[in-house]
Image (tube, rainbow, N blue to C red; front, side):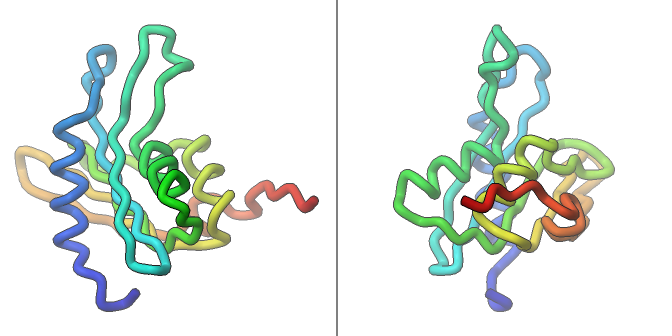
Length: 134
């Protein structure tokens, strides 16, 4: 996965962020998940009047991945309009950890002043993740 075009993934995340449904927070997020097989899955946040029914962009992309029969994410790109770039929430971190012990995470802040990027890993964002060993 070292030959992945991060700029192309950022563009896909930016494009899907435009579809976000965020009438309550006006905080639009786009995400792209890349799997071990090279498949790409996009997601955006979808808010709900009951708040608890809202879904984040990262989980939206993971749901697309699972629906397509994939299960090994290796890269997640998340784009917001903030500087510094917003990091996945705790629930998203745990959902990502359900499918990967570690993965590359690229956080992008798409601001009026320009783009800001920060790279991290899932293991760094969620050390000692909860795992149910059945």
